[in-house]
Amino acid sequence: MTGSAAMPEQPILAGDEPEADALASAKKGDREEFQRLAEPYRRELQLHCYRMLGAFHDAEDLVQETFLRAWRGIDAFEFRGRGSFRAWLYRIATNACLTLLASRSNARRVLPERLGPPSERMPEGEPATEIQWLEPYPDAALEGVPDAAPGPDARYEMREAVQLAFIAAIQHLPPRQRAVLLLRDVMGWSAAETGRLLDATVASVNSALQRAHATLQKRRPAGPLAARVLPDDRRRALLDRYVRTWENADLDGFVALLREDGVFSMPPRREWYRGRGAIRVFFGWAWNSYGGFRLVRTAANAQPAFAVYARNRQSLEWRAHSIHVLTLDDGSIAALTMFRAPEVFAAFRLPGVPDDARSTPAVSQQ
Image (cartoon, rainbow, N blue to C red; front, side):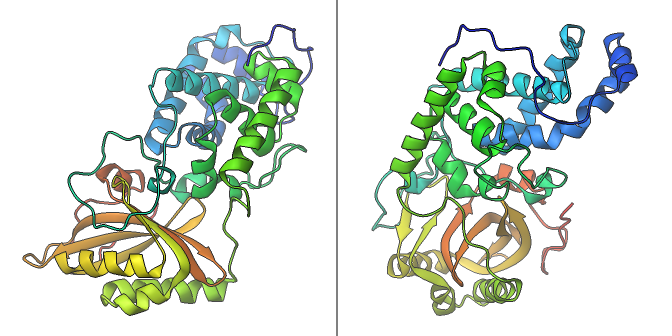
């Protein structure tokens, strides 16, 4: 998508105007004033980069890169209207994401269920670490990000637009289409505002958005891209039962919590399983290797999640095992994604080895 027509000079994105004095000081080399101007946008920019890239650590790095580029180019920034400083940061962040994605042979991250049919065998060989796997996003990083749609054209609520199903679906879009969809349907920017950020015409922005909608419709032809919200009491009871079944090694109880056509996957393993029967067979095999589990509640992608610690049958030492992200639907678990990688625990600020190895780990959720 390219554009040659000049965009009209108009305000972009209603928002707080940067203080003229602070901006002037930043342009004179006052880094503290620059940080004060930019820092309020850190978390929303990080979320935007995560949606673009599908990886928490990449998003963190790209926000740092965005602030560095903005600091180096602050002299070139010209205040043209309300919110334009925020739009300028989004422009830098989006272009940084597009540059990173262009440098990769594969510009999308995936979940196992997007790679092929469900498995009928137990995992064999080494995990597929060469694949770019989608990463979970800790809810603690969502604090302070506006929950309401910031523009009148937004189609998705913030909660829906961070869930695993949505992030996995948009990874199938070409990077610029992905950017257009996020700016238009998630951020609620107009076609003109989006075109200005991407140096594109309104017509090309609208065309890219139509193609993105068609791809998403093909990838997920029925149903919303977000899980339905359970009432608090039913949700709490379901999650309490989930903890008990794992910590008591209650295979029957665990399987009973799953939807009949529930899905289980465990990146970085390619294998994934559909249906209670197949999932039961897997866990009947997998749990035999362990001497116990302890679960610590957390949250990821606006979904319930658990940090799971395990010990094997030869040792009493608890060690980090996986982050479980649950998709709940109508009182059951529609999907369980079990992320097994050390960097996942680091993103949630969870220790790899709990201090008290003989009891339930005491873990900070800050």
